[in-house]
Image (cartoon, rainbow, N blue to C red; front, side, top):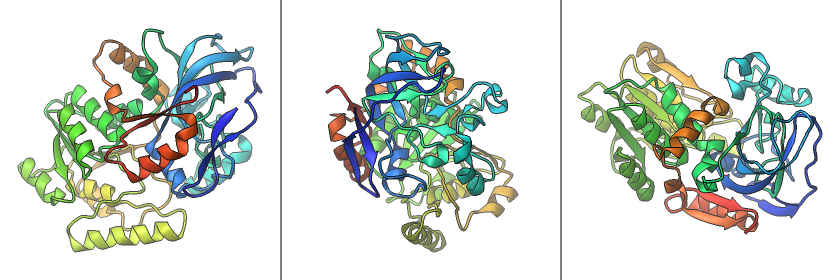
Length: 397
């Protein structure tokens, strides 16, 4: 089959690789009909996530048709399914608590030492996202093997086209969980850093959950325009002192909740000299070695949040962050919730909202490409983020 494979920093190629096979009774094989490039994929593309090896198949946002099943799979051949990017066994302590991304069994035992050493405990399993998360082949391919297929995939009705449901695989539930983790109450003001796909879905979700105001922060005109269309007030961080603007917009209090949808490769530069120097130091450290995160957006969000407020952290961080404002976090009494998305927890609810038209997903898509042009998609998704808001790849085109 054809699949997108990693060959080093900024080097991804569509190669011919062996077809996947059933190796466990709970497996299923999916023929991919749609797959997408995620902002998290760019962390691999940029070489800032460790344990990505040459030849690894990338991609964790995908859906397709079931073409083969193991004897213990609950899926049937011919069904259309969306597959969560999180691989979850369904039976461990965390899965039973609906903390699906923290599954204890999905990440193979022989690969758990890497993330256990880095994070204190082993990570769960993820598709196409380094050997820290199991080294599972991803879905930017013609076919993919889905472990624990009796737990993960959701069957979608034939009357819903791929473009309406594809993002159930990751960014829609990630944006929804970001808003959920912000514990939004009626009348709240919520500030969202980053108007990429997750940030835009977080904005849409926060408004759906009852936020009175959502303030979106970015610098790309098209992304800010999409945020405004969703109902957000917008701030361009290159034109505005964000901290000062948020104080003025909230009567001096600050937002009730803040959402960092940027993560480890933050590019923002705050106007004040101290934070500006912190951001420069972050960038230098990340350039010279894996394990250093850039945290400009997170620092700014913590400083901006009102006392007693909430910090939601869907943006991906993979290593260590210097100059973390722990004092501000503690002295202001802020609550923090973070983590990879517990996708399966939200799937039925979100599928229902898509069916009723209460959630729009198609507005996000800017480009559709055949799988063979995936390297072009990656380059433009990184370099032309104003125009390339979301890329969907079609293996059959």
